[in-house]
Image (cartoon, rainbow, N blue to C red):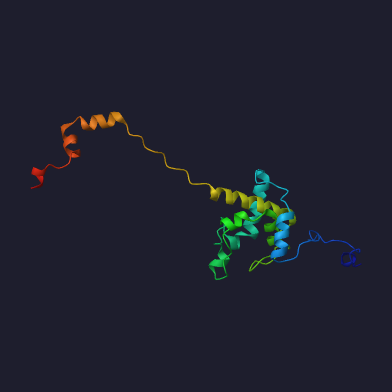
Length: 173
Protein backbone atom coordinates (compact mmCIF):
# COMPACT_ATOMS: atom_id res chain seq x y z
CA UNK A 1 0.00 0.00 0.00
CA UNK A 2 3.05 2.33 0.03
CA UNK A 3 2.47 3.42 3.65
CA UNK A 4 6.21 3.69 4.28
CA UNK A 5 6.77 5.89 1.24
CA UNK A 6 4.36 8.64 2.19
CA UNK A 7 5.47 12.23 1.92
CA UNK A 8 6.05 13.70 5.38
CA UNK A 9 3.68 16.44 6.46
CA UNK A 10 4.74 19.99 5.70
CA UNK A 11 7.11 21.34 8.36
CA UNK A 12 8.09 17.88 9.63
CA UNK A 13 11.68 17.65 10.82
CA UNK A 14 13.55 14.37 10.26
CA UNK A 15 14.92 12.62 13.32
CA UNK A 16 17.82 14.62 14.75
CA UNK A 17 17.71 17.14 11.93
CA UNK A 18 16.49 20.16 13.88
CA UNK A 19 17.58 23.38 12.19
CA UNK A 20 21.04 24.58 13.16
CA UNK A 21 21.07 28.36 13.19
CA UNK A 22 24.81 28.81 12.68
CA UNK A 23 26.46 28.94 9.26
CA UNK A 24 29.51 26.87 8.44
CA UNK A 25 32.84 28.65 8.80
CA UNK A 26 34.73 30.65 11.41
CA UNK A 27 32.04 33.31 11.93
CA UNK A 28 29.36 30.69 12.65
CA UNK A 29 31.75 28.69 14.83
CA UNK A 30 32.64 31.76 16.91
CA UNK A 31 28.96 32.67 17.35
CA UNK A 32 28.11 29.10 18.36
CA UNK A 33 30.98 29.18 20.85
CA UNK A 34 29.56 32.29 22.46
CA UNK A 35 25.89 31.28 22.42
CA UNK A 36 25.70 27.48 22.81
CA UNK A 37 26.43 25.87 26.16
CA UNK A 38 26.83 22.20 26.98
CA UNK A 39 23.79 20.93 28.89
CA UNK A 40 25.99 18.19 30.37
CA UNK A 41 28.99 18.31 32.68
CA UNK A 42 32.14 16.27 32.78
CA UNK A 43 31.39 15.50 36.44
CA UNK A 44 28.51 13.16 35.48
CA UNK A 45 30.04 9.69 35.13
CA UNK A 46 27.18 8.35 32.95
CA UNK A 47 27.52 11.28 30.51
CA UNK A 48 31.29 10.85 30.30
CA UNK A 49 30.91 7.09 29.78
CA UNK A 50 28.48 7.64 26.89
CA UNK A 51 30.79 10.31 25.46
CA UNK A 52 33.73 7.87 25.63
CA UNK A 53 31.77 5.22 23.69
CA UNK A 54 30.68 7.67 20.98
CA UNK A 55 34.19 9.16 20.79
CA UNK A 56 35.60 5.66 20.31
CA UNK A 57 33.20 4.98 17.43
CA UNK A 58 33.14 8.33 15.65
CA UNK A 59 36.21 10.34 16.63
CA UNK A 60 39.12 8.08 17.54
CA UNK A 61 39.71 6.94 13.95
CA UNK A 62 41.19 10.38 13.26
CA UNK A 63 41.76 12.00 16.66
CA UNK A 64 43.25 8.86 18.23
CA UNK A 65 42.26 7.15 21.47
CA UNK A 66 43.62 9.98 23.61
CA UNK A 67 42.84 12.98 21.39
CA UNK A 68 46.38 13.47 20.10
CA UNK A 69 45.45 13.37 16.40
CA UNK A 70 47.22 10.03 15.93
CA UNK A 71 44.36 7.76 14.93
CA UNK A 72 44.66 5.10 12.20
CA UNK A 73 43.32 7.38 9.42
CA UNK A 74 46.16 9.96 9.66
CA UNK A 75 48.67 7.13 10.01
CA UNK A 76 47.63 6.06 6.51
CA UNK A 77 48.29 9.43 4.92
CA UNK A 78 45.23 11.61 5.61
CA UNK A 79 46.26 14.97 7.09
CA UNK A 80 46.26 14.61 10.87
CA UNK A 81 43.82 16.65 12.91
CA UNK A 82 45.21 18.94 15.60
CA UNK A 83 45.68 17.52 19.05
CA UNK A 84 42.58 17.97 21.17
CA UNK A 85 44.91 18.30 24.16
CA UNK A 86 46.75 21.37 22.82
CA UNK A 87 46.15 24.73 24.48
CA UNK A 88 44.23 26.02 21.45
CA UNK A 89 41.77 23.10 21.58
CA UNK A 90 41.40 23.39 25.36
CA UNK A 91 40.51 27.06 24.91
CA UNK A 92 37.68 26.36 22.44
CA UNK A 93 34.25 26.89 23.99
CA UNK A 94 31.99 23.84 24.05
CA UNK A 95 29.58 25.49 21.61
CA UNK A 96 32.36 25.98 19.08
CA UNK A 97 33.39 22.32 19.32
CA UNK A 98 29.72 21.37 18.89
CA UNK A 99 29.65 23.54 15.74
CA UNK A 100 32.76 21.82 14.38
CA UNK A 101 31.31 18.35 15.00
CA UNK A 102 28.01 19.40 13.43
CA UNK A 103 29.24 21.21 10.32
CA UNK A 104 32.90 20.24 10.04
CA UNK A 105 35.97 22.42 9.74
CA UNK A 106 39.04 22.23 7.54
CA UNK A 107 39.62 18.59 6.60
CA UNK A 108 37.01 17.36 9.08
CA UNK A 109 33.64 16.74 7.46
CA UNK A 110 30.29 17.23 9.15
CA UNK A 111 29.39 14.47 11.57
CA UNK A 112 25.78 15.54 12.02
CA UNK A 113 24.58 12.34 10.35
CA UNK A 114 26.90 10.09 12.35
CA UNK A 115 26.64 11.64 15.83
CA UNK A 116 23.29 12.51 17.43
CA UNK A 117 22.86 15.99 18.94
CA UNK A 118 22.94 14.82 22.57
CA UNK A 119 25.87 12.53 21.83
CA UNK A 120 27.87 15.50 20.47
CA UNK A 121 27.53 17.25 23.81
CA UNK A 122 28.46 14.06 25.66
CA UNK A 123 31.56 13.62 23.48
CA UNK A 124 32.55 17.16 24.42
CA UNK A 125 32.11 16.32 28.12
CA UNK A 126 34.36 13.28 27.61
CA UNK A 127 36.87 15.38 25.70
CA UNK A 128 37.04 17.80 28.62
CA UNK A 129 38.01 14.89 30.90
CA UNK A 130 40.81 13.94 28.50
CA UNK A 131 42.00 17.54 28.45
CA UNK A 132 41.85 17.86 32.23
CA UNK A 133 43.83 14.67 32.71
CA UNK A 134 46.48 15.82 30.22
CA UNK A 135 46.76 19.24 31.88
CA UNK A 136 47.47 17.76 35.29
CA UNK A 137 51.18 17.63 36.08
CA UNK A 138 52.49 14.13 36.58
CA UNK A 139 52.76 13.07 40.19
CA UNK A 140 56.19 13.80 41.58
CA UNK A 141 58.11 10.76 42.74
CA UNK A 142 58.42 10.52 46.51
CA UNK A 143 61.47 12.32 47.84
CA UNK A 144 63.78 10.01 49.71
CA UNK A 145 64.63 11.34 53.13
CA UNK A 146 67.97 10.24 54.49
CA UNK A 147 67.83 7.85 57.39
CA UNK A 148 70.23 9.26 60.02
CA UNK A 149 70.68 5.86 61.66
CA UNK A 150 71.85 4.34 58.34
CA UNK A 151 74.44 7.09 57.86
CA UNK A 152 75.71 6.61 61.40
CA UNK A 153 76.10 2.87 60.92
CA UNK A 154 78.00 3.31 57.62
CA UNK A 155 80.41 5.86 59.01
CA UNK A 156 80.91 3.78 62.15
CA UNK A 157 82.91 1.09 60.34
CA UNK A 158 86.53 1.87 59.41
CA UNK A 159 86.13 0.29 55.94
CA UNK A 160 83.10 2.44 55.14
CA UNK A 161 84.83 5.56 56.41
CA UNK A 162 87.87 4.96 54.20
CA UNK A 163 85.64 4.21 51.19
CA UNK A 164 83.86 7.56 51.62
CA UNK A 165 86.95 9.60 52.33
CA UNK A 166 88.68 11.46 49.49
CA UNK A 167 91.96 9.94 48.36
CA UNK A 168 95.02 11.23 50.18
CA UNK A 169 97.81 12.93 48.18
CA UNK A 170 100.21 10.16 49.18
CA UNK A 171 97.92 7.49 47.72
CA UNK A 172 97.71 9.34 44.40
CA UNK A 173 101.48 9.13 43.77
